[in-house]
Image (spheres, one colour):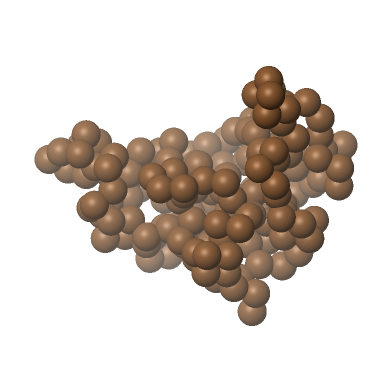
Length: 160
């Protein structure tokens, strides 16, 4: 099994608290798929406002967690760690469906499969479950870009 703990994950993703949404990689296969987890805790800042009387993880954050797992899979597949000038951008989110609420105490199991990689565009099928029950699914499309730190703009695709 290919696993990654939080310290290894931070080598591949630029996100940090409160936006780092992958806690552990359970397994991954280069060029194919990744399975990771996000532990949902009541201590997360978002639950102060979403919703105070019935905390529910926002759907956009579930999609973001899946995208972070996809970015990890992309970097692991390419066999390279990003530098401070490398970012992953969403190009599309299709067929997103939210099937059940995700609440503090849940463990979100993230499963992402590469569908296609062409001309710097990565397409994935992604789903997240809680205790085997589907919580969210979506088709994601992303690209990796190098940014010009002096201008803060994306300049060129990351060579694959």
